Length: 239
Image (cartoon, rainbow, N blue to C red):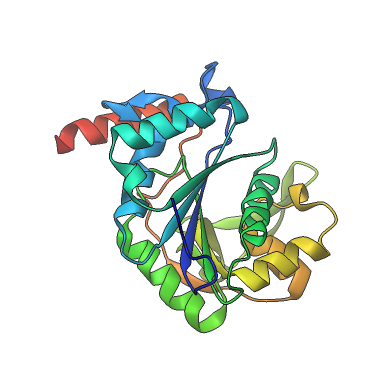
């Protein structure tokens, strides 16, 4: 597939390296079949169908590269310009692999890179488009939702201090950044695996404060059997 990386584009990186240990399965959760299709396909379809995205990078376990290509082909997702590359044990190192893939292809530094977790299957095209819009203006955008519950800081097993919940948000993905900002951030940070998301990595490396894009509680991350069961039931209701 020929693609002009030298032009300014919007790239999406779908991180698919999770092992699903909390689901007690030998199959990575992204490849578990839920309501008739593999879990990662739900997010992949939304991203692939979104007109704001020009190219998709699937970051996968090495042994699942061929399987991923086959699933993409089966679902017609191979028609979108894409690449399937090998991930790493840690999430941020998988993201770094995607950034290095773009560097090797001499990406235009003014391009944007949207990062999404494959185990958040309910991402919407609106979230993606708003991420792109905000990152175009500020170089960094992070999806988040307001905290509804009371918040507190604990110390030695007890509440040490209460936090004003109006100043607290719960972070989600997608998160979107200019390629130049992400690349320079990875160069400056010695151990990217110490960070749980790209927003915190970029903030630490460059001091850049990301713009907030309003997310949605339905854009939850599937981390255990209850989440998986809830998602499967919700999909069956839509059929």
